[in-house]
Length: 269
Image (cartoon, rainbow, N blue to C red; front, side, top):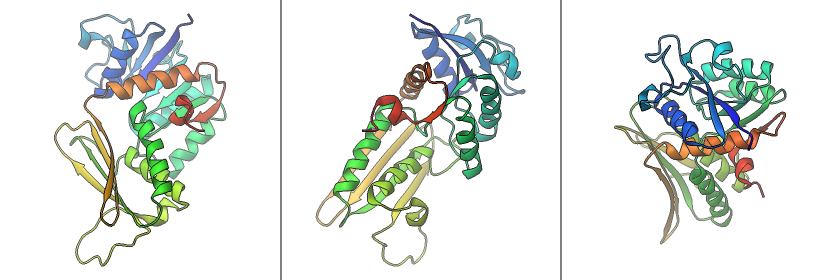
């Protein structure tokens, strides 16, 4: 069995620690490096200190040191940091799994450009369950194209900095594509005051932020006399971590290219 060397960005954060633990628990992956921001509390410490273990990977803000020997970088940080890491990885042949959300159009273009030089999995949600849910939403939208109003409700912890979530936006894109619409033209991100009747061609978004909610997403198809709700609720970040490891394994034999979790899971057909 070939061992894949994994580096983790944001190793001291909530998601980073979950990834560290998942890599250490795997049989075919090795934690080769760990990145943190210069003022990170864990800088200079072993990435597995919080587990009471020694992984041999020291958290560093130096890209060259943190990515030395890495086959794949898994990055759940912030757009500006991810793009900096991605530029280095593309120049040094390191593959990248990007779970970071909140990219603008320029950031997404930079990811596409980097994918011409190295292999990248870029998805707003790495959970296997969420991506299967996306497939269900595509099927539902195709069969509920008329007579149903579509609303997307998402809830996350108080620390999340972008809204709506990347997952909610991706759900909107999947539904809009299935309906032959452009999400940029039909999305409604907030309602207040006298809004008038609901335009049936729109896709609405509602955002909740509070407490320690890991991530809840519900898509409501509201028709006359019935409503269909398709939901995914996360009780742990473990699902995101395991999906990320599947994405890393998927990239092992890919020299370059931009992939999503549908590709990783074989859902594109």
